[in-house]
Image 1 (cartoon, rainbow, N blue to C red):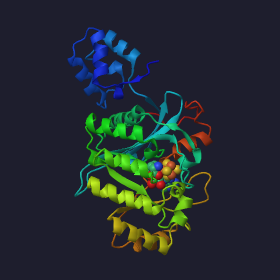
Image 2 (image 1 turned 90 degrees about the vertical axis):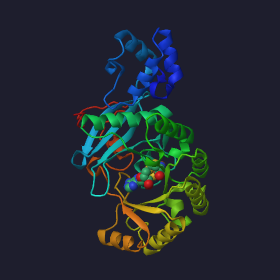
Image 3 (image 1 turned 60 degrees about the vertical axis):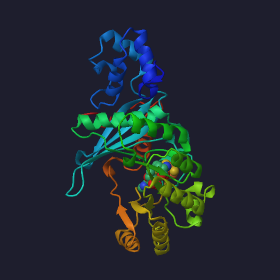
Image 4 (image 1 turned 120 degrees about the vertical axis):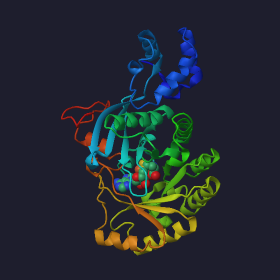
Amino acid sequence: MPTRALSTAGEAAILDALTRHGEPAWRARQIQAAIWQPYVGDFEELLQLHATLRRSLADEFAFSTVSVGAELVADVGLTVKLLCRLADGQTIETVAMETPAGTDSRRRSTVCVSSQVGCAVGCPFCATGHMGLRRNCTTAEIVDQVRAAAGALHRRGMGPVTHIVYMGMGEPLANAAATLESLAVLTAEAGISARRITVSTSGVVPGIQQLAATHLPVTLALSLHAATDELRDRLVPINRTYPLGMVLDTASRYAEQSGRRISFEWCLIGGVNDSMEQAEGLRDLARRAQAHINVIPMNRIEGSPWGPPEPEVARRFLGALRGARVTVRDTRGGDADAACGQLRADLEARRILRPDGTLSPPRVPARA
Ligand code: SAH
Ligand code: SF4
């Protein structure tokens, strides 16, 4: 099995392989461009190369490091959730979401990528947190999720990809090396503008500093979920290592250096972080940091008694944020196990997902 990932091999390595096969150098550029075409899913589809060369390249390079095991469609076809199988049988989730053009907004296609198999942070409301950390994703595994999602959108007549969010499984800044390398590949080679990429973090202070040092104008989303250390210690356990004051200082510095407004994520949990005190605390912190607030009503997960608040309580909470910039995130993919790690957890519980990453019947709807 080829061990080298095509998407991160670089032009020199491809050039080297071509030279060994007596091919002209310009073919390297041809291959590098084809990597990012959503309609090319395999070496076999690179018809501009002759069959022997296609086979030789396939022996040397892995066209993709992820293979799509299942696709679930939600939101009248606008959201496609992919269960991606990695070479060692691990599985991660990737989501592609299409937002049609509005009266004052352009069409967007956003891909949400996973950065780790599982997560060590252990937020109690998060399905991925309940898994613990299995391993980090490689740079190629992060980048190849975008390629797989672009292909899935293309097959359904949607795309091309305009935005990327690191909001799938895992803590991207606890896997900073691969996350930063993937940002470099996606901005330099896939042609996605850094301004259209968001990295979401639970608050890994050294990782935020490393991200700032890249000078890429990527948007930082901080998963706040609590406005006091006491509550945040429980909801986002990494707060015990990097408490609120420290993480807010680092995030504000990031905003200054990058020139990008930061956003605060708030998973709204009934009876846990939906009080007026928390709302007022959030509003004040957001004003101080000039941050945008994203409120996400909690998706229920297996193994947690928590859920979203009653609509009336949610309305009061949002009312107390008046004056701040607030978006309430509709839980896209709601009918396809929306929040990170939920699809995998659900398929595992129903014994549809085998431990080696393959699927057993009853099958979930496969590709169209
Ligand atoms: N580890 C990173 C990025 C992945 S999680 C982080 O925590 O920021 C992406 C977002 O999904 C986070 O804001 C997280 O809090 C949120 N999330 C996780 N589980 C959720 C659930 N059950 N309901 C709603 N949002 C959830
Ligand atoms: Fe990890 Fe983010 Fe889930 Fe917390 S919310 S456990 S940091 S993936």
